[in-house]
Image (cartoon, rainbow, N blue to C red; front, side):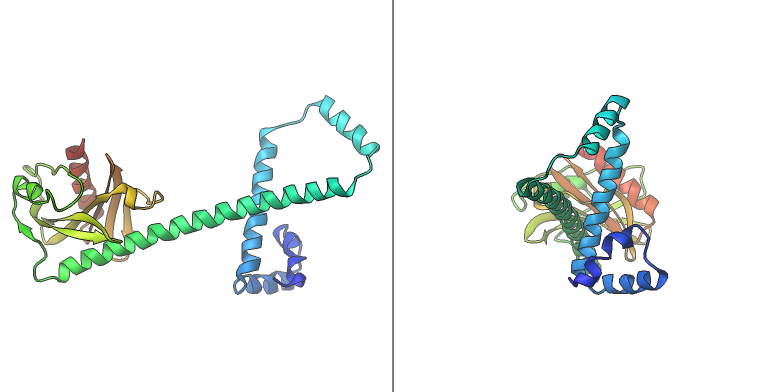
Length: 248
């Protein structure tokens, strides 16, 4: 990280650089991961300090004592200076590690959703999309016994627009799970079920748009569920609700 840029980072965050310097530093940050990481660390530290300041307001007595100490400052020894610098560095390092950890969790979650979408597409393209064919949940559920290391409940589909086509054993990052195929009108929906301990904790819940598919994910009784398809978000949500009710 070039010193010429490092010296300008605090001024950059305070918005006190000239317009031309702001443009130059913006361009540099887009190509320098070290400087970009440093800016993120300093910005998070600044926000943390601002937030902490709002939670505590010094009373008049404390302010007076502080003014007296400033008026007659004690001589700072090299050890005190070193300790102060070390403490500041430790705060920056911790904030930086937290930012990196959050980013890694987000990337892991995105990877999982991409894998789920790929599994769904592979099922759509397969000439044999299911290993057990049945519209009866009492046939499909027992078929999985001994093939995957967990059990699950399936909903009753009477008075609904959904049809259970069948199921198959699938794998996500070498973890075995169940894939159930449902149909509503002309749309095919995949329901994936895996042990939650094998997946990142950062997976978001609720109906989301992923590429050309709608997908809803949630955790229930040690299992991670994914409902994905090109059906509308209402259809995805309705099937998810049926599964949630069956799981409780």
